[in-house]
Every structure is written in structure tokens, then in C-alpha cells.
Image (cartoon, rainbow, N blue to C red; front, top):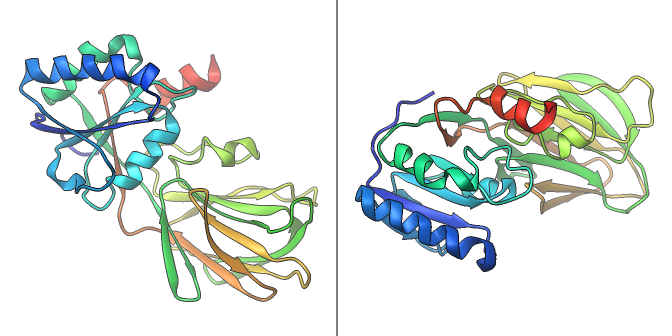
Length: 269
């Protein structure tokens, strides 16, 4: 966890729905003017490194896009929930003025969230959410062999496998029965999709061990996706290696908005 400083330049990232966002954007402009904060409206072409903080007006999808956008520049991302679930966001729309006034004054904390790196044939891709290896033909199972830390863990017939970060663990991983991982945990979850087994269980893997998943299906390919984007195709015998990334994304939140507070509000109530 990192300490925070007062904000002077703020990158603004929205989910692109003007009817919902334009009034909120005007409210944000008024708070920024009052607090002496310069706003940089994101067009996805400029360098995020000029900002002290990124503010998201959107839901979890926009938050994940912002975390990817700000990864290289190491800019913290703070979210106002204008989406559905908004698990990664810190405040609700009716708290926009009071919450952002506190944030701009430096009353926030920064949590480091692990990323993933996938490698296929020497080509690498970074993900902030998950790496998924799934059957390339809808409705067809594949046979996957897998190993962790160089130790063979056998072969399993399934629709695919999800390797998730803590920030991504409440998405596709959760919907497939995978574990929810606390923010700041330096680990990844490995969860099989529709395994044809009574004994397949999700596994949480720490930084010191890499995951290797290999396609063992002669007639069906395996598609590898990084944060939902197609990355590679695995023919029979080809593999993807997944490890924890060398850099973390930075999630900004109010001091009282902890992981467990968000978990209780979103999933336990």
C-alpha cells in the first residue's frame, strides 16, 4: 500500500455513454475548479504519465480499461460507479463531490494489484484481469495438460482454464466457481471452465511458480485471450506460459473503502 499526495493533474476516463456521463463530467469539472485541479480528458492517444491520478466515471469494465491504460505510467485509478456492479470503484454517484474533494486533497490510499504475463512462442502479453485458454470451437471440449512450478498436474477434459489476478477474480473466475482473492494478494487463481471431472478444484498460485497449459486435442485448437482480447491459437502440443507480471496496477480508494467493505456491499448483502 502506498501513501497518497494531493492531486494537481487528473486524467478523466469514462465509459462513453453521454446521457449518463455528461452531467457527472460537469459535476467533476466544478469540483476540480474549486480544488485547483487540472483535468485531462482521455482520448486514449496521449500519455497518462502527466497525471497524478486517473478518475473513472463508469463501472468495472471501464476501471479495468483504465488500469491497463495507466499501467505503464504507474498512475493510480479512482472510480466513481456509473456501471452495474462497480466492485473496483470507490464511491457512488451521489458521493461524487464529497469523495473527489477528499481525493484531490490527498485523502486516499493506493493499493497495488498484481498483473499477469502470458507467453506463447516468445510473444508476450500483459493482462490486468485474466488470461483464458478456451476451446476454439463452441461446444467442443478440449484436453488440457497443466503444470505449476515445473511439476506436472495431469490432463483434464474441459471447456478451458482461467488464470486470474485478484482484481479479476470477481469476474469470469468467480462465475466459474473460482476463489475471490483479496486486493493486494500477490497470487493468481487457476480455475477450470466446465471440467469433466468430479475432482477438479481451483488453485491459488504464488509468484514463485509459473503455470504452463498445453493443448492435447488433435482436432480442436485452443484460443488464448488476454483481458478478453484474442492473443494466440494453440494447436495440438502447443503451450501457453502464465506468470505474475513484473509491474502492478494501482487502485486508488478512500481509506474506509476496503476490500471487505466492497465485498460485503456487493456480494454478501
